[in-house]
Image (tube, rainbow, N blue to C red; front, side, top):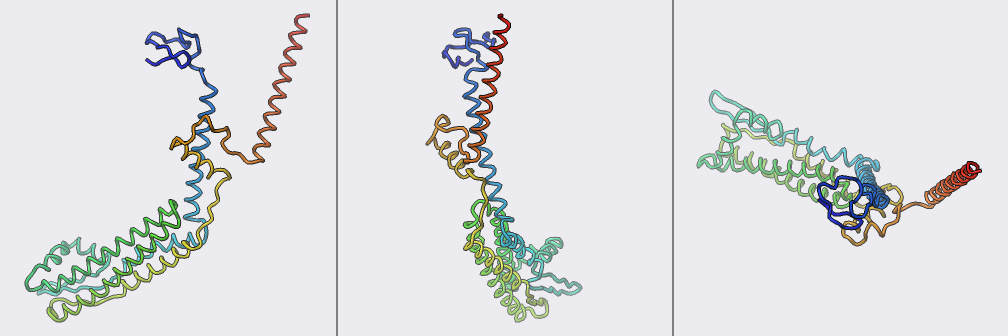
Length: 301
């Protein structure tokens, strides 16, 4: 069992009554007012932190027309992977199959079970050079798609820091453009090697999907760069940033709850209303006391 908060005497298991057997203090309501005030301070700080997060989330997504535009264009690179980067036609006796270097094409390769065999052909003495080039095309396609997913995730997380996340999305998009450009180079290289070494078995033709992906990332960079330079005005409730700063100091034990007033922050208008209500409550309390004293006086007579 614990000790009494008033006299610090040990409480036994049999001391089940609400009053301390040593000093008689009511254990349930001891220091009730102070605990109530502390809970009120914690509540004020907690709601302030929630409101600040909601304000940042709202500003990051719909805080301006540019924020909405950035949110829309961040998915353009992902959509562009539906458009083929290139097409591969494999021609064997009694078998001809066409695959595209796109999301749909990769799904077709996986469904047919052809992806693994085609990639393993890069170790072949005969077809090694051709399918090594194909492997590089596939690799840079996947890396570019990975950067596209990262750009969407960083855009969604922009409420953490709009400027930092916008800068990160610009950097990610630039890396994606580099990878898409490299993919264009390797696609043409793959087509050239295949046309030279296996003209009757493999037919490779480049498409414009990589160019559209690069253009989509350019739009993403422009939107995020403008947002980085101009920023977004976040509308906080008055006093919330101060409350969040106090909550940080409280967590770091730079201040204590006892040092904080209640309310922790209030505007001049709120202070005037609070003082007026307190004055009205005091007047009502005094009026009830006077009425009670008159009743006692009349009853005594």
